Length: 498
Picture 1: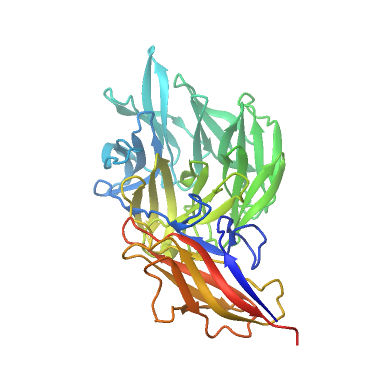
Picture 2: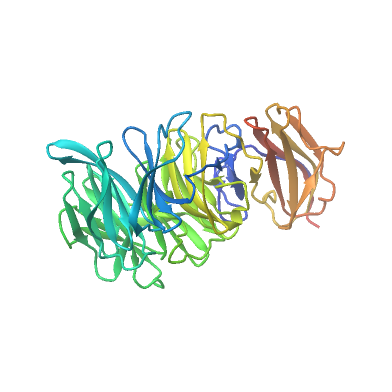
């Protein structure tokens, strides 16, 4: 028989699969908790708050110009015609409100469409336009911005045959590329449009792409959705049909590809599971697995390309799940620490099992999001430097702990919470679970939760003769004030073999 004190004081490993992962700082679940600001404590994230569009509108995609004006692509809901929105000072501490920039007189908006701000040389001067898709496959533009703008047709994207067909667009070397089925369209810096700048191999269509040096990596899905692998084709931006190289990703359902801190990552989702792969040369390595993934439909991706965004070395992306849809994040608290996955923010405080991601954009400290809330299209924002409210839905759950022996019995005697001094109206609640069962709330000897001071002491009654233990802490914030948790402690007696 021996007495031990197990301290959980590192949470920077993020969500890891399995009951007892060995990654430093691993947790089994973490929601709306900031693990990236400081390795010595964790705290609730600032939450998304309700945002508003002009009446009778929906928003599906974002882009920003060099002057920090954020543009939204969407529709007016009477005829479903394209509507373009604008918001000034998107990255400032106190950004503007959404207003209607333009409403088309015809042409239905595409619910998974894109918008791209593009600056071209026209008649010897620089002009700014917004490019977007109207109806099923018509590429249009609005501009020149600031100088008697109007809508005009650019060309046809013939690779799109249905209103729900996926599309993507990127800006690369001052020019824009737009994926439409098997083809990639191009608009150069003089505004010249080429519908089929590149043609992918037969049987494959692009779902996303990134620039890498002087090349493009195109993530592709088979026209047969049952195929259990995806492809990345490397294009030199010159050839019209011949790719330079290819990489096989050993999973279907490709969602997006991103260059994250000079590491190429790919997300795939299929059959209720999502996996993130990291490329090591031409070899994909699975780094993270996420369960309870929803079923993709023709109109709803699991993680739309419009939802991936980067901020201060952290990758954010929307994820559609059966239980916990939200804005997930992948990052490191410090170099050398694990690349950690967390549920960073909910789209709203409503039931997140009924949410679906549509779009996400980050400018400065501010998050802008579009999502579906149980059938209603909504938008939200978080102004990071404008006194945002901290989450009261934040939770962290440790991994299962068995003191290195899953067979021998243990008695949990006491439990502890260590935090910074709690401010008025904030609190921490402790829950314990035993032997892979459900949680029970544990209170201090006087029957209270930890709501003042910086140390919580708990008698862990009902946790004797167990083999494994797990702890959960729930955070309650008060406006901009929130708890900062440093550690969870478990005082245990490990018994002798019988």
